[in-house]
Length: 250
Image 1 (spheres, rainbow, N blue to C red):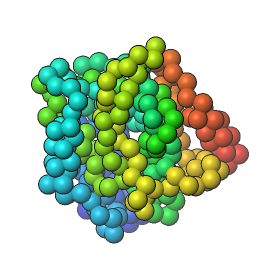
Image 2 (image 1 turned 135 degrees about the vertical axis):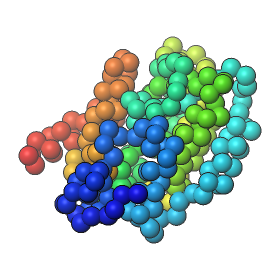
Image 3 (image 1 turned 30 degrees about the vertical axis):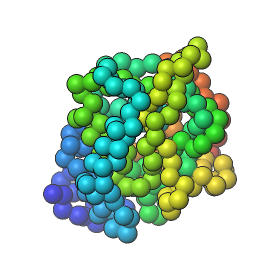
Image 4 (image 1 turned 90 degrees about the horizontal axis):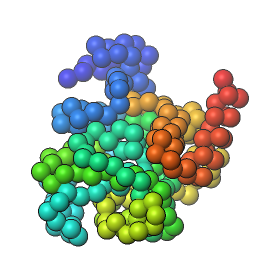
């Protein structure tokens, strides 16, 4: 266990953040998820936040699999944020896809990960309505139980998201069935979907946490989509504004 150190000083795992905990070098990994490191750090950095228990997380995953629309040949996970460029789970393939009835939004306020208590950041969630261009990740049937357990350890550590089976279409508009997607929970205090875009831009340009900066998260998501030939005007617009604000501040 890492010994807390004062802000700005160095501990055995590197420089400490505002809460005295070390950064997670290299971002989220399978090892960190299996060891429960992110959950433990969140509990220490934000003791006021209610985290899901192991039993609650297992029950959530079990309920999703019980509601699974297709069986026997693997399943799809819809990636719209960091899962695009850092899935950290074993996948057998990936394809361009669109989630129907949902849209991408910086609507999750974060005080750890890519923000801090003094300078909260913002991360992506899916909100109802519209369409969301993204990527679907295929999890092979033999890997479903273990890999989805890791995915739930990553996305369902608290109550900020609600997992859903969402309808998806391929690049030609043909139905592909349904994929697991983590949609925003608008009833939680972490929901920030009503913030003005200027405030979201400010958070992305200035906030930084244990996993890196908000700007890095935005740019990596935009670039991850672009690498597969997908352009999201929402991400492009924000990226231009964030880059400009960072240049002005630099």
